[in-house]
Length: 205
Ligand code: MN
Figure 1 (cartoon, helix red, strand yellow):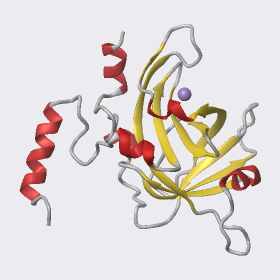
Figure 2: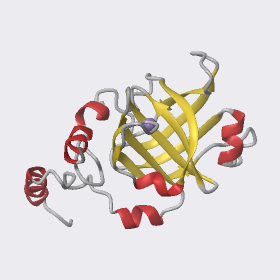
Figure 3: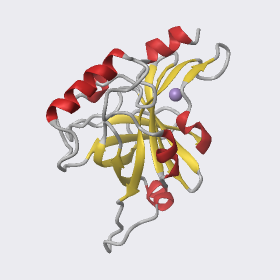
């Protein structure tokens, strides 16, 4: 087995001292990640209100939702996900501060990222294209992130009102479900640089 328990543990400690690096096992290699197709990314964004921008690559753009509470690994949680404008693919690895006066002013980190798979099925059990699944209001994706793994369902809902379409992001039941993990609380750092959103705000002020 590559890497004994001991070696892995000391690696973790070393990386934690250098906060520019994500803890061992949590770092994603930007070059590798961007080669995968399609990708997902979750950017933690402290604008006027803190939220998590969940983005899925679909037909050359990033379909995007703003999730005020962030994703949960507990299938009992239904997290409001407000659909927002599509973003360009290049935005996926943006980390930094959106300047005062611009839309969404505030710091952004890449909170999680990786490849994803569309696992949406139609009534016959055949794979349904993502664009079709989204226009029908129900999509299921399999995430291969550093913090989030396994199935997640996006379900459009009429709840909540407002001008923008409201969806719910729900962890599907599988081996990656975990009601106690709360990664939003316990894993606040960027998977690209190991920084928190507060550190990015301070460093780039
Ligand atoms: Mn945002």
